[in-house]
Amino acid sequence: MFPPLLRWAYAVPTMFEGLPAALHPPVALALAKAVESIPRGDALSGGSVFEMKFDGFRAVCLVGSDGAWLYSRQGKDLSRYFPDVLASVREQIPPGCVVDGEVVVWSEGRLDFDALQMRLVSSKAALAELVMKSPASLIAFDVLAVAGQDTRGLQFRDRRALLEELARGWVPPLHLSPVTSDRALAATWFSDMTATGVEGIVIKGEGQTYEPRRIWLKVKSRSALDVVLAAVIGPMAHPRAAVVGLPVHGRLRIVGRSTSLTARAGRDLATYLRPPRGRHPWPEEISERVLDRFTKEGGTTRLTLVEPLVVEVSADIAWSGQAFRHSVRLMRVRPELSPTEVSLPEGFQRAWR
Image (cartoon, rainbow, N blue to C red; front, side, top):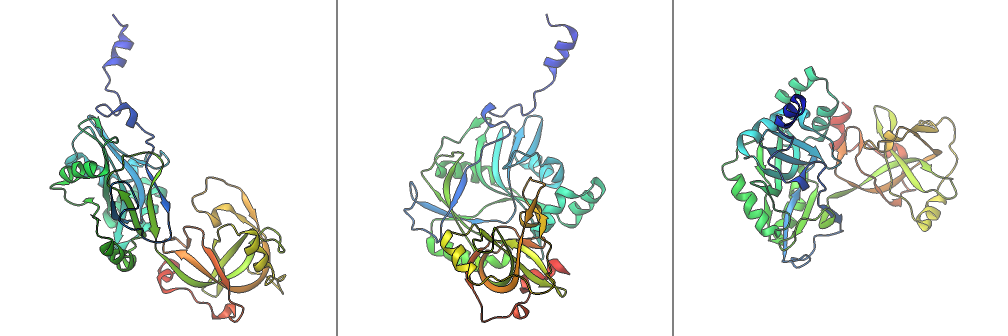
């Protein structure tokens, strides 16, 4: 017989009870590889299905016999930030289920990533107000366990059938992600849904099992726009990346950096770079978080300041707070334009009010 303390310990329900042990957090999630355009329907095993890529937090939802939890792709417990979602999950999803999806917030008819991020930095008192003002939703697109059984070995078409059965009768804030096997309809989604904050299209193979690697494909909506390049990372003669800004209330604000430049692209850009004339609007050293809001590093980045010039970039439509959420692609230098001709795009103006 166990001593009293051990008897008590063994009587306490285990966290995540009723769920497959292999799916206890952190859960390794399937990911998507970026491609330039929507592929043909036979690009993946078993034929392709197309799905909207929503602008939110990727999250895996676990429903055990003694509770429900939300975990991020990186394994962070998000549960306390989304009590509204979890309350609905406990009511509508039976124990023993693990659902993969996206947590989002809708505001004025479009996805609001800023409101979503506020959940993670708010005090308990402020969080309650945010839940009332900007309720969150869970958009489910895959199921990894049902009735305590691991379903990752099933093909996508069978997992989707299970998910649709699970979602029968769901009401907001739980939603089933729409899918289609019609490439033309997917192309319409791609062109028409960006106005709502949908980032692009994810492509999945109907015959694919669920694996924790880049088994899917994704096409992200991008827009071309003019920005002001006023610094580079690396020496002026061999820049490794461009740092770009936009005019806000009469000041040039840093809004992001480019992807790493190839040697050739760096040489081409260097021919346009000149030392700054007069006072420069930016410091020579900035926090790494200015260029990457998701970095875990707390260091600084050294900038090589240059005379501002206009460049055209290709950028994801995703805009986080007051910066591009992802690195932009440098397309070309616009020497015929003056930095004073660059204006803040209409879609970004709300963030700077």
